[in-house]
Amino acid sequence: MAYEVLARKWRPKHFEDVVGQEHVTRTLKNAIETGRVAHAYLFIGPRGIGKTSLARIFAKALNCEKGPTPVPCCECSMCREIAAGNALDVLEIDGASNNGVDQVRDLRDQVQFAPTRGSFKIIIIDEVHMLSTAAFNALLKTLEEPPPHVKFIFATTEGDKVLPTIISRCQRFDLRRIQTPLIVERLRHICGAEHITIDDDALLAVARGAEGGMRDALSALDQLISFKGDLLTEDDVLAVFGLVSRKSLETLAAAVLTGNMGEILRLVDMFDSAGKDMRRLTVELMEHFRNLLIYQYVGENMANLDATPEQIRALAAQAALADSTRVLQIADQLGEMEGRLRYALSVRTLIEMSLIRCARVARSVSLDEVLRRLNAIRTAEPPAATAAPVPAAKPAATNLYDDPALKHVMQMFDGKVVGVEDGND
Ligand SMILES: [Zn+2]
Figure 1 (cartoon, rainbow, N blue to C red):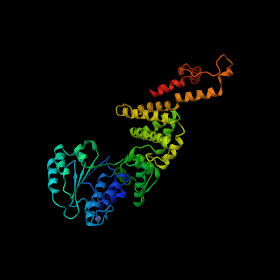
Figure 2 (cartoon, rainbow, N blue to C red):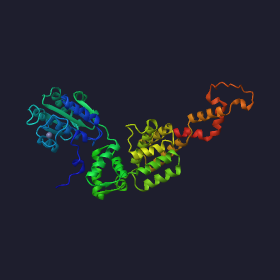
Figure 3 (cartoon, protein in one colour):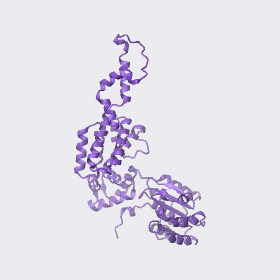
Figure 4 (tube, rainbow, N blue to C red):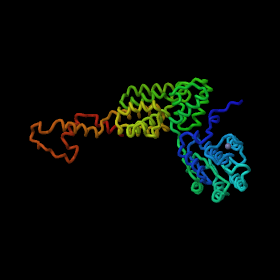
């Protein structure tokens, strides 16, 4: 039997198999159960997250011989034909290659006929934003008053390129980028079934490389299996994708948070010499600090914390290294660096300089802290103790910087307060 790539073999068959899009699957299942299926749906979202799979599952659910049902049997001839893409009543069109007005007119003629075997005639148009304006307009007429046996399902990666007149006639669903832990779980399940031995950090590295797309994750896994066989380690994955290991990334973040310049420069040198993808490193570092910030504000129970249990343990340890104001400043710095990366003549130099700036932010003393320490000194040493002719109950200085006690603290911190301003530049 011919080898079937994992992305095809493990393409979701039921609504439950579609990972990370519960907000869509629940609504679609309810619509079928309550008999309130709209005549047109639009799925918007990045590539490889399950839009076309969802469209096919929905088509099966509507046309299954035991349906319409939220749980299509996947065994009847209708279900099997839809899965194979050759059902007569389900027309699947790629908007990128059939984008002309003639194709849409063809389609318009075809939908006038009743379905041959199923309950509905279902038109799936993938990459619908690629249709020409004339084709869009030809489609609009059918979409306005479709025959009762016709259902449209559109999918697109670029929702803002679809005409508003089309969008307003559809039920619109925005599909999300799949969170890393969910991809890891799915990969773990698939590797188990495929008898592939792979450790947790390697699974995480595949998911990291896929950037929220399940299809990319499975294609990557396929590539790795061809390269290394059925025993995969984190190093194998990192070597193929030019990624930095989870532990190294966390060590670099810790070096930034503790202001350890030597360690920062050593790590950047190590990554650069090993040929790691430095742009990707920046993005992942930003994601790390984003997660750290979320962890600091709301803890680990927050659903939008895109991290596995191992990553959360590292976040917990690092949360105490710097307050959220500084973490936010570091994230800002990294964001600015990311914007400058594409114009940089030397990516490595830019990263080194930016990380040193980040580390200076981490080490600098914030005004809040100065004031806090100032208050602490005030309570510890009441002005009366100096026995000077200063009024015992001193009113607060009108100008903060005229306050002699604050000046005293400023002198104590000496150059470090100036460092704050530099860090913010
Ligand atoms: Zn069926």
